[in-house]
Image (cartoon, rainbow, N blue to C red; front, side):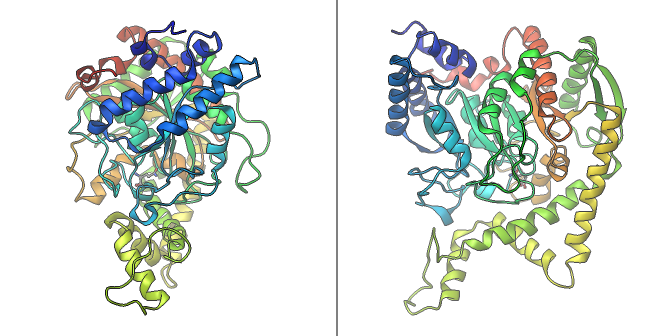
Length: 510
Ligand code: GLN
């Protein structure tokens, strides 16, 4: 039946695969097998996956093929395989959140995101690597070893969702699920040359995600094209009664916007505070060129100022550890996950077992944040730290509101630099945290953000990302701008940026 050559199968976008499936040119088993072979060939070097579900993915693929063969109505993406960040609970499939504490845990239920993928018939290739409990910007805080950037295996793929981004960039999956609490979908997207979207807070259900900071966490799509991200966003998004913060009402028309890809008459606000000192010149240059392209396509550009963004970083690193310390208290060695007995003491008390387990199970970064958060929430300090940070959060939301009076979307570089070398920032937490300086404000205000590749920086020929932000529940605007820019850049480059990734060319395709 194969009408599409195998190598091309890996290169096709998810939407092109969906078309080929519905035209009967290829089967889901063929596509899924091609991806599983690719994973077997390259993941030893990339380490994007913590778990590969060969049998499960092929069984799901065969089931979709059977349904299509009998003419049953199926979802447009049915049969297109997907990778899922290991923070999403998946029934019958290990879910570790990158931590020793959850090693061997197999959830008895699906997160809503996973359930929607399953119902729509997307074979799940496996679970992707991440910084422990999604704390980090490089995937080096994973308890299972780092992921490598397919553009240069000595470099980081971003974090915390480096596994999902690297899997998509290395053609180990057509698209993937990520989560973004302070930038963990967008920053990995920027440094791997992929597209990543953090939807409006409440736009995608958090039910069944291992919680980091509940008021900031949001799941979203990781893809190779803006349209693929929109198709996935539409599939996983929308109201869920299992999540009390889920938005009711009709979700934004993201797919329609990605297909429209038109910025004529749109007001684009360049954020003054996101782009000055500390931004790599090559990243900045690609950003300026992208803005010029949008102007050429009929957008109006204005400069906007969001003065409180300068405090976003400090506020985030009080709010996130505070919520994380409370969320991570559930790992008490009693209910699930790891249980470590104090040495030579089978008669230890519950508290002693808890202490020994948390000491052995959490990595350094998780411990650092638990200590910070517990301190910030303690009585006597609560108002000074947590309370002040919450006030800053309000000021940031007001900055956004004021900026959106002048502009329909805001733009900035996604991350201040391209991918740095593995190990370079591991001993310097502040340097690591600064990678998210441009992505954090969106999480604090609950507004949506997208990162789309803007080109290669001159200094190191590594990918840079262009960030688009929109008002809450206006996620469609991200896709209009992202798709318009992507189309113009692809024309300039003669195809997608990922076709120029050197490490990929060096690896055998299957
Ligand atoms: N890098 C940021 C942090 O460490 C973002 C994490 C995330 O979005 N999950 O907190």
